[in-house]
Length: 324
Ligand code: PEP
Ligand code: MG
Image 1 (cartoon, rainbow, N blue to C red):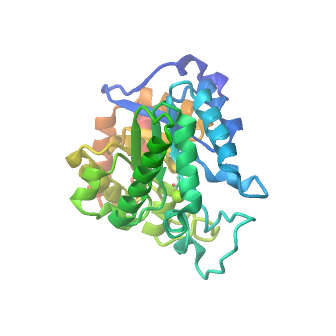
Image 2 (image 1 turned 135 degrees about the horizontal axis):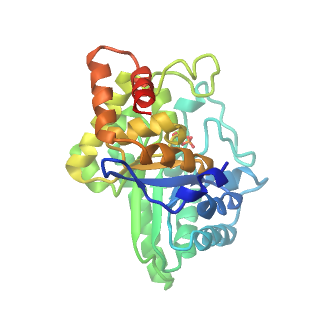
């Protein structure tokens, strides 16, 4: 399938009305990295570091992590890689960590909550990332941040690790970007100061949608019940875009929906200019963006909303059909 899009692989995704959309890929294992070149992705927008923990039967050592992350950065040869710190708990349980018995794991002790309560593993990971960067630029993203204070606490851990590395005389990253995933509705309503302080935000659409509609993403009975192009959800995302624009906070979207062409088109139309998806989706998404006018798609979305439609999907699909 990727050969089909070979002719546009090196082309930047610029729409007919001249808007540039950054298309990056999701990854988690070394085996994903060759896709950086074959897909035409401009970088890794989400590196799920927990996957390398999940494929082992014991906790990796810091030196092993340094080697792994260095190989990831080597393979990216200068393209930006967004390392997401461990996102465990809920559906991702490490076999070698004490299991917690929780009635609602998706709403439970997971991701940054574990990282802040038991900071040992997070510190090891931060240090490993800094050593792997070894003087190169480094980008770190914290998952599942629900309130400003959690971001601040996580950021303080980064500063502490940086200081430790400095004292030990290790080379520091050439630059350090620290961001958060926006995957709980609460974070969209954080104080303005949060939007000013955070280095960037990435919408984790899989979780954000699950919590927005209160519909379990693992539950077959409800997971497809609500459309991502539902007017309420799009309006919510538009609000996030507005808040980020007001503070100049870089915003991307990295849930599975970013890789679905119609969804990607609508997200771009409402102002999200960086989409992170599985590598095989880059070609199809780019192909549609190259043929589209985002201002017109935005108008179609607005009209569907004004007509009181529940989802804008039918209107957008109609429009695309008529536009050829
Ligand atoms: C998300 O929630 O959209 C996301 C990208 O993270 P994960 O799917 O790993 O929870
Ligand atoms: Mg998530």
